[in-house]
Length: 433
Image (cartoon, rainbow, N blue to C red; front, side, top):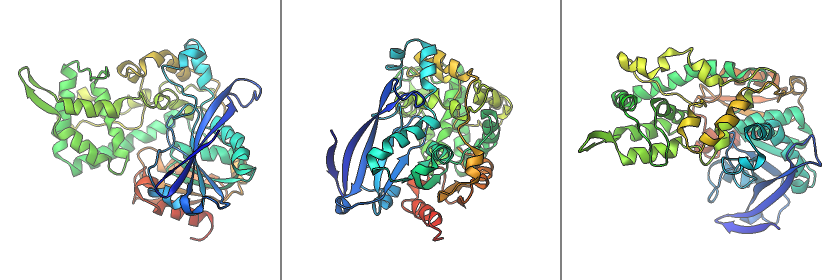
């Protein structure tokens, strides 16, 4: 039974759907998907086209908006919007350290999680679309990993789409995870250098914190082991529009004087654990590299292996000399499954996924080459999370896709840019710009 309720200017309806765990076995096990339908209050009785939003991630539920902010308000001017919690996330059937043991041991859990990639998400969309639109195609807006899913949608089921809009999410069509991270580490270094140019006082602050972590065993209040590598991973913040400023404020008051000398303050530790813990979205860590698996090559902890090719990220070497400490970015490492109490029970499951050699292709270059769906993509210049060169190569491979390349925004432009990014994409897809 659907339940409707109101926020200022918006009518919301909770929607729940049952879909196969494995779409190749439609009569087998099922899981539940949750989605929130939204329509502007003054258009609630109108017959409007649909837009389905695919959140970034993997492993994040759809935004829980209050009111009509950013792109959401723009979309509500002409669409009914479906905010889908992709399988395993949000209020959909959860997949985490508490629920995955219901599957059995690590091998069974890993097998289960092979069904949580972009291809399955696309099949989910196609399974629920007739129930939502009556069979009419809809517009998809994909942010980041949601953009990866959108390219998979154009590959697997373009007949379900009236338009495809992508923000910061054009994947490499055939690159291995190693290719992704070899391109990523230089971008991450550029973001760190830019941060230190803006806040030069943070060079010494970061070195001091790293030195403390190399010589002390720090366990955060939630049980997270704060190692120097974990501290460096806070650089993931630098890919967002406010990230550099937020990182600066985190670093500026990290220490407090105590009877035992200087220690990391409770305030710093509280903020750090909120930024580092994957308790709310463990799938982001567990299946992160699996989203790049497309053939018989295992991902094999790609980000960790490739990091060794970039010795400037070695904290101990930086501190032994006079080099600035380099933060890292959007990468998942095996040590995270030792540090984070929300991930520790899933370590063996993650190891099995990293070793897997039976990944299937997520994208169809031949079908993309004859695409007929109106499509547009925002490509953020020097995006820390998605390589610009990879994105533009993919853009050229999708027939008719129009790109807007801009350095006005970081990876979160669809949020930080208010209605402007969605406005631009719609104009491009409609050949109005």
